[in-house]
Length: 114
Length: 115
Image (cartoon, rainbow over all chains, first blue to last red):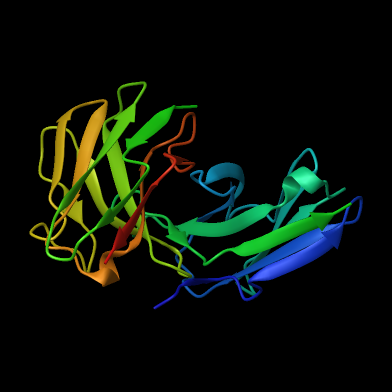
């Protein structure tokens, strides 16, 4: 069963505006969350992460928000740039996972238009 | 960050055959991971490959279908055996990140199509 869900397969945003990508999870044991960015024909690239003890983590234009009670996290990109156009994957892990397995969502394809 | 290469980058294979995918890392790592991404699906962990011991497989994946080798700390192979069209996927290897081991670095992937 899918423990990490990204319900929006695609999102289109104008350059300079905010992009908000959403992710929901079902496993309350998840204690670490990550966002990856993937360009075509490349592997996923780590973008930003957040521990379950925090509710916000910021890195430049990228901010991740975590709402544990709602089992929801979001990635905000401000301002959005055309180079941000990619597929974004949400991932989560817990110590109860075997080894260091990451549970991924199916991804959201972001298109930033000029 | 680690630099990871995979070979081949893509292949088209006939059903019933096997394909071995190679993963090379530019630094020594204890663990390497193999993932699969089927069309329209999320990345799913197949197994964790530790140097000097048997690979650990996730539920739904077995060694006979996906044998893994880990001859040294910079290299691993994944074989997809007796392939069927359902094995058409992107296969990716990854390694733990530094300083945070949770932030895995991924190779570029191998796109496999089985006819």
